[in-house]
Image 1: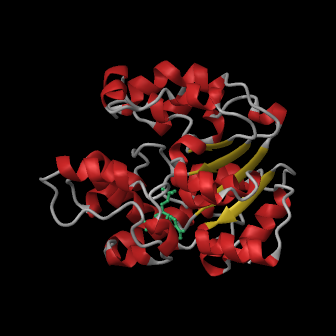
Image 2: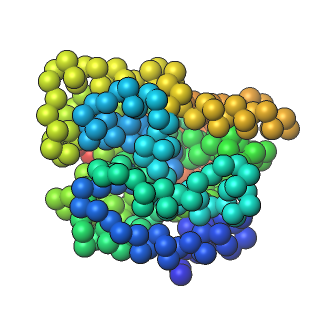
Length: 302
Ligand code: A3P
């Protein structure tokens, strides 16, 4: 469909495989007590998954440390991005099946744009947490992610050009964000931002706990915020993707410059280190074009 083409343009290696699985994703059985973490890549997904998973699992830190987040909170379409042979070799599970097999309450991650998500999301209406981030930080973080996970050796400029042309996987960042912004007032939808999590994590945790019908004492809040701090998550192998990266690091020898870890900087405004003033201007113009007359506030709920 047009949605698939916009998300993974023909020619993109992931396109053909995803198309073969799109129906399974579209027809997934959604459960009312699911919690769906939906984002454009690099917007604070892992951070939000950890918060939500712990909230709906009675703050079970022991299990959270023991079982990798990728198993506790599967990435719906991951297994649809590579062919079966690669999946077997790299030990990547059939992720749709992993979601189907998960015990309730499930905490599910997806980067799919709204129109490609399981249809039942809109009839069963489980809780959905959307997270948006300043698109300049998204672009810079996505560039580093590309180097890390896909062995990208091009320049940051070329990557940002592709991002602006909406031909990176998952397509247009603003179309993605605005589709969820437009449904932010639905009672089963919560719209958070990376920036607010950085500025006032306890406030976002409290709002999320209320949304998920969880009660927290002040000690529980303190411990959860400590667990969710950048420093703590960077050291936590259950969420840091360090094990996958160790494998990748062994393989990638031809990358120019340093490959940064998944838990890279976790900052607001860090894009300034990667994006040139010319590209900054292009990104500004892109954003202005997309937001004209929309009323989107980056610092939503501040
Ligand atoms: P940077 O690359 O800018 O450092 P996602 O999980 O959606 O892929 O997002 C990854 C981004 O979120 C990375 O951004 C990562 O460092 C940041 N991040 C993850 N956990 C975080 C935390 N606890 N505090 C702040 N940033 C965090």
